[in-house]
Length: 366
Image (cartoon, rainbow, N blue to C red):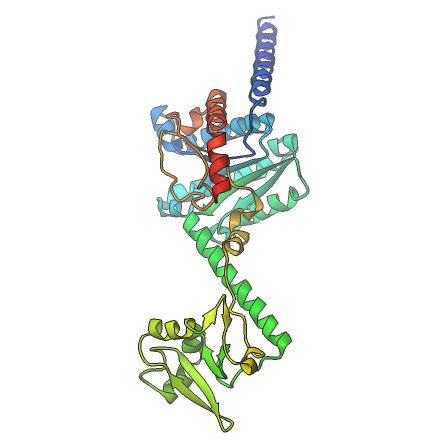
């Protein structure tokens, strides 16, 4: 009898709590709502110490807090939630702790794929963001399996940043952009039938003088250049001029900066100037734009965050979404991550609404 009454009271309290949340979310929805919330889950270890819990228990409590916060976000109508789960810098922690975190991550990824999980409840698509090659094989395979299993879900998106830092993301994006532009240029040159001088990587022609890409030429053809000029080949821009059908190499004296200044002075809007005959053989210099880099970001699958929440009162970004948070308000409650609750989220949304017009105006100025 007592147990039945207790269960009934608990069920009633849960129903009232759900009703209250819906009422508050209805009020909040009168104003602008965030489309993307990013979370830095800080304070799991301090929480465990504060509660005299065993080592590792703080991270398990943090996972429960994450499920709770995700439910609130998706009930509110937030489509994208990004969580900073594991930084590349976290690999510097004690091996025992890293191993424990990897085991916990593997366990929780498998839980997300269960039928009763939050993934199926809200129709989530999961992305694991970061340099996944740094993860151990079981975790990496589980992450890839979770992404494949949820690829057709469209209602909401959960982005989990693991083995991630913004520095690594930006470097990766720049490298991929360079590769893409190089492949694009080579394909374009091939269609135009541009021939290169034997032994020289051809990048551009200025009045029949071929100016070589130093980074490629000095790496791939350094031995050939040294045979021609041992002291100046890689100290400036190498010119190749045809005289009587013979290729003659001319190093432009001075530093590489001086040489490229001379080349740059003959260009305009990325194209090489010359006489009418040489213009027919011009090669357009590839330009990498901001959009090219953004296209190759790990986070290109989601819009920029509208709110960034970092718990435990810290105001640092800790190498998280540095590129994407230029116009994003930061909310830093003093609560440790496992202590984060419904009212913290409500306050974060209210702060977002209060500053919404200001940040929208800043975005339009870009």
